[in-house]
Length: 182
Length: 286
Image (cartoon, rainbow over all chains, first blue to last red; front, side, top):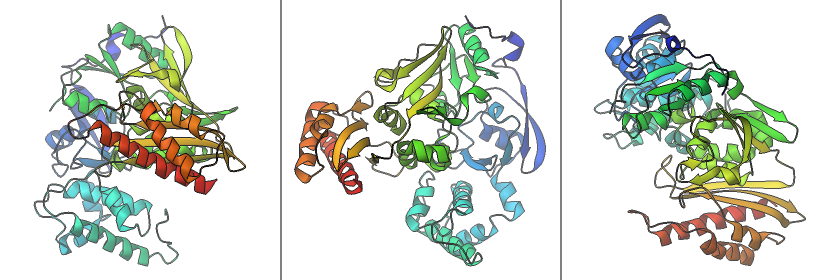
């Protein structure tokens, strides 16, 4: 037998309330959760950040995407206790910072949303793509959005919007070469 | 769509994780990226009493060269397969397969160790690990051991991991300059489970196949080496006739079941199509 030193006090009981400390949208936050509470439920129900949508709750639809330490992840595919100490940026934070203002304006201009349920997740996926790749091809945009379901638009307007913003951002970076990582 | 209530433990060392599991009476599951486990919990396909979070464990991290092997820590995320320079240089088949694994946000969380330990028969990385003749490092109550990929995948979601054992790392033989790789899969939608997929590692000398390893996934209960096709190709030039012979040999290697939406004959046909394309690419590169 191994010589581990786990004591009962180290284990969070199922009905125990656990304090989780996070930095959400740049502000230090503490939430009291049960171990089985997902990050999306914590964000929506406790912090009232309802821009992160709970759709399929099994990682298929992409409506619950947030940035965890700067990378897009499904907030339904992790428990809040797993996010202890992490930096979480939601659609509210990205929106207020102005980081995705051009994407939001272009989604609006192109009618790249109808009911809007998928839009926060779409924006987070698009933002991650455009942060990593200059002038992605339409194929690359489709690939980056492949985990985001939209039941209204048929996707074409969304791809148009992302491609337009990619072009506009690239035009501001003169030495940018097509399809290359930033 | 909510998980049954469970206890939660943040393990800081392998010993702590093993100890917590041993005390759970086999009612625990290890969690790292959780990209397959959390949906299974949400759907209540699984309902463990204890989740042991192994993500803080330093010994499960990192990618490093160790002699003639590349050690890839279990916690290495799928997205790192696309960016890590050591993987690009020494294990390029993992890099080639990574874009096919689910969607970008899943790849940002999911881990190599989790994918290999789960051994989903339609997953890319178990087949890649098999094609590479990798070895799986395991820690358990009885100590450490290494298991060849060939002996690791036993049956549907069943591996050489005993209950309470932890996958520590995947060790991959270093890629050599005379080797070629190819990877592809056919799926109905991008990021969806593959109808069939295949990874190939071939050693080429003077345009002849010296040695070749072909691993298929989504063709049965486990990732499967196409050994008859491999022997058809060994020592030969990759011309049209030889590729056709290898495609025909798949009849002896693969025995997919009929499923609701994919008849066995269709899956076998698609396997031949993928093999033909991949061998063509290897031939072009040779």
